[in-house]
Image 1 (tube, rainbow, N blue to C red):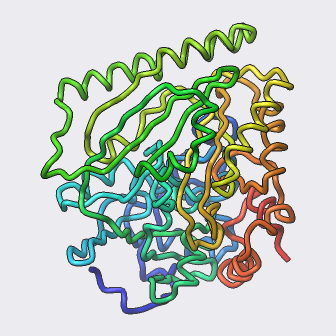
Image 2 (image 1 turned 30 degrees about the vertical axis):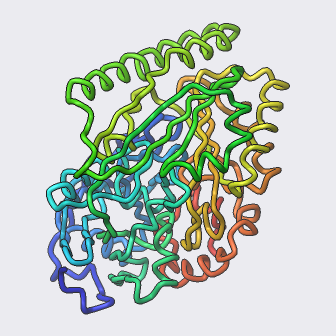
Length: 461
């Protein structure tokens, strides 16, 4: 591993070199679905450690707000930057590898899809991944991105160390030797500092066997916890106004025993997914947009036509999917045992409201973890995610769903749509007061804040 014996260092002096040159001033930036936009005064794109440290140091000295961004895949405005936007797309790749501990350190701008090509030659893999792999590693952990599997916690749980430049201009190396600080910074919402490197605890590379089926919604809800216990990864998708779901069970297999599906089968699955799961969904969404009364029929057709997989492949190729149809999303986390009642109540609410939406509702689960702001903090957690086509208004749909979710003590995903404020969120997180105190210490002048963080964490005291 690289030498990090000095825990803190003052950054930003001229001896560290010049910052990245400003680029793209005046450009309108937006998040992936395009429902939030912002126009920064300055855009910096550092490609070296010297330039990155200097960029943050300049902001500290001049008191300017600075916001690092990755792929802008958050579905709310948590990444909005109105002053300095720090674009980290050039700050990628592996920094160090500890073979004995199976740990890999990468630069914070590294995208999730870039990790398998780094890890596979080392015989390693991420223990779990979410459905989408476009995000930067720093953005994914900062917002609490998670995958599927009741024995597997979110991506932030894989972080065993990170390096961060805080709002005082100090560079901190945070490890498991300080578990409280690490658990605070694992899911930091971008509010504590600019993460520059992330050390990940990996596992030996593995394959997954995936089986997808059409099943009755009532059967799955009645057997929810047994389904979770019966597979390494279990989730299902439900198109509102239908009584069937698509279930997906994924189990780890020994690479020395199990043979991967033939390449021709894998290519066929990919082509069918592109045609049915993306192109057909795009057509459905456009038809539903202009002819909402057709949505129930479209949803039944979509359920019947869904590409059902039964194959074995490399873990990341099974866990992640290509999502070309842009959408807005709201996801809440619940005590895992409460999910069937949440879905039952949601089903009643959607029928009462006459909701017609062409995107499926996604339901999955993850293990409890210790990160202070994790949606799974202290409890095994079930997740219910609702989506709306990016070109349609989601406000009424999401408001109705949120009323159901709030009634079940749901915690909203930090990187997705929700309307809760700091006062409403604080009681949901036992360590929120500790996190806010840490924020006061590491960003006393609120250099890393924006309107979104002011809403969910509170304004400067």
